[in-house]
Image (cartoon, helix red, strand yellow):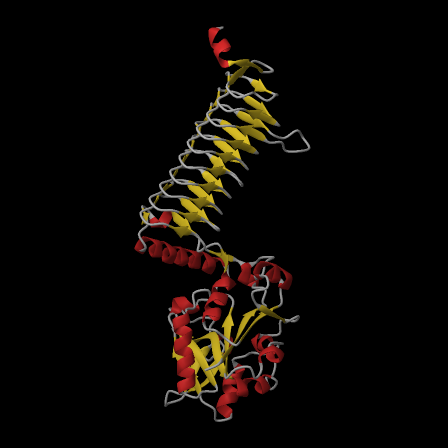
Length: 449
């Protein structure tokens, strides 16, 4: 069976009370419409169109060129929205599937079952239905005495008897392509909008079969306000966390662990409470992350420890320990065996293997070699008010407490600085510098004095 897919994402989502399109609101770190696009792509359609309207430019910027867009300049209802895709999709496949950008939990398995049911019954339309605990606000599925679908009645137009019906419309439908496109023009407006569901009554009047397939409530839940979005976030977080635990990751308190869908974690890593793992983050095996830690867009190697710290845009090789209360900013790269202690901050800097930065220090735009000791209170003075300047520290350097490294400056291999030194000039290898401004002396001479 060949398939075309239309995803409706043109509405503002007024109940969100937001300046952003509803379908761009994030769920576990991704726009909710991305989940629908992923499932749609898995079905391998011959054509896929995303109907956009409100916030069209924002959607284009967020989703890029991965999808074909169809614009609905005026939001005149679901029937009008699907009609906008006719030129792109008509005649391209046997079946047209209509999805909604605010149903991120819909699964491939459910849609495949729906499509099989549609084909086996040779239906003109197949509805995906469900039975919520409270059907208020949903269109009710009307069936005749034989059980055949004969219509859909919207809640506000339903009689008291019809409101007692518990089977409701999810909005997800599939159509026979050859039947659909010409019928869309026959829709009559209601309250200024053209409803796709009115095609059900039209199909029945023509003697066509309208089939229905039941779905789980959670899969078809539309997220049209922030209360539902919060519930969906909790459900998605539970699914993600359970997936990682089944894959060999320990979460000490899943309820207070926040892992976005894009994160990857290795086996035997332990995640402590109140930890947030975000964006393009990869964590290796046998790590300990948290508690009270944020890791965003970072690569963490094996056997690493990060405690009560913020790590963003950083790279940690194996056997690195960070924190508590450290801040690794964009461009921080810590080689194997590096230690960064409490209240250390690193930005756009490389620390070589075995280097130690115990506490209360800042390194910016710096390159440190192996086995460097960074004393407490060390600061790279890298910004002159107009430009950033580099600091280079070679292997085996000892930096005394409260040293100011006024960039651009270089400390040669095995050099040392005294406590409180203000280093404004390069220090040759093996020499000691101390004072304000610091002056270099040979190490043996300095020791004799």
